Structures are given as structure tokens and as C-alpha cells.
Length: 154
Image (cartoon, rainbow, N blue to C red; front, side):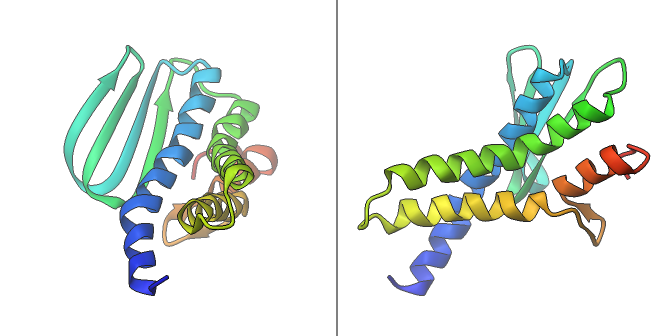
């Protein structure tokens, strides 16, 4: 497999789909914690389109679709620390589950599915680690703060 083809696949297919899976996990966690409204953003830069799904979810598509994503939610009363843990771990849990399921069905010859499965597992593992770098905070960081810190988002 040519490395350029792999790179194009990762950037244009695996990354956006993996981010969608990961951020959807946060949305699912927010839904379980009775969020009143949830936003799921795919990409960065100028917002190109917003799609409302039902009464509670809005998906925002940005110009640089392959450059990450974000999920947020709001409700009238603050989330408890345990609810913050559920929401924060929803993303990595969804990524890990997707990777595991894909690995169960991948055959020896299907390198593309295996690569996508491994990409999702990698996203999960990185996000389980608590770190803060250049203003970015991992899901593990938010969990650590909810359990051991003051529970604030910063």
C-alpha cells in the first residue's frame, strides 16, 4: 500500500469519520445526563452549515472538516462531577467500541477497515490520558479534574 494513498485515506476518510464517532460519544453521554441542548462541531474554521436534529441536537460543519471536532452541552442546573465523567468518557468509549467492533469483523485482506479500527482505538487511548497542551485538554484531563480537582472545566 502506497504511503500517500494511506495518508489521503487517513485525512479525508478516517479522521472525519473517527471524529464524528468520538464526538457522538460525548453527545450520547450528554443525552444520558439530560442535557437540554447539545452541539456537535466537525472541523474548524468558518462554519459552513448547521443542521438541527430534533429539539436538542445541532451539528455544525466547518470549512476544515478534517481538523478535529468538539461537542458541548448545556442545561439549566450544573452537571455533577459524576455526570462530567460520563460525558467526558463517552467520546473515548465510543471510539474504543467502534475500533473493537471493526476489528472483530475485519478480514486479513481488508487493510482499510483495519486502519480505521486502529485509528479509532488510537483516538480512544490518547483521550484516556489526562493532559493539557497548548490550551487543549484531553477527555482524561476533564475526568481527572472532575474526580480529583475542583471539577471546573479549566
